[in-house]
Length: 236
Ligand SMILES: Nc1ncnc2c1ncn2[C@@H]1O[C@H](COP(=O)(O)OP(=O)(O)OP(=O)(O)O)[C@@H](O)[C@H]1O
Ligand SMILES: [Mg+2]
Image 1 (cartoon, helix red, strand yellow):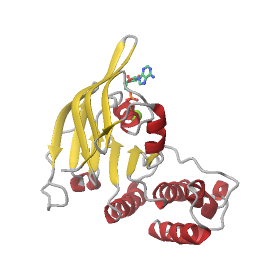
Image 2: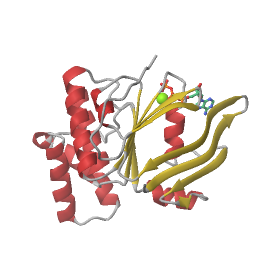
Image 3: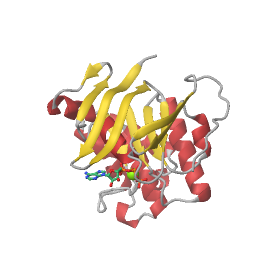
């Protein structure tokens, strides 16, 4: 076990509602964790807390064994992580290459390193032919691929995905999910993926967590990197 994110006694409340109430939750380094649950279960809220975007009302969040106590620390840790939401957000008037290069540029990478990493990410996500296109001219599926390449090109330590495939169907979704899965496994990137649909990739995750009314109601764990049997999930 090599804890990457660990939370203890986690509570997130508004004035009249308990949104999250989780005693213990652990994501090990390099694990691919899937969180499922019905609408309003608290999936997005939990993801925002794990990715240090939202501070919990009570409890601890530890990253790599270190308690996150102040916002300066949270900010610097957040730079090592990336989050993708339902809608891809790109800089419309910039090219695909410039969009993907952006996170590398702000991290001060050299021109050569940027060129290598962007090319490799574009190849990995099958969008090399779009390199010079402006982002506004892309189809929805292409824009989604660019947003994944951008999120992953700087090889973040952790990736958080909040139902990023909601508006993609069928074969495209399956193909893109397979590309994302291959990339994160290859680079050993810790990933937490929120979805409310049964998908094939779930069979390959290390941990499947069911959330209901802000609580973990079921947790299925596979030995990381070991051959896996199918999860027996019963999602209503
Ligand atoms: N800032 C907030 N203020 C008040 N209520 C909130 C706030 N954030 C979340 N909630 C409530 O907390 C509950 C959980 O919301 P959350 O968005 O985490 O659910 P979810 O599992 O992601 O749902 P969905 O599948 O619809 O995306 C909901 O009832 C929501 O209305
Ligand atoms: Mg949500």
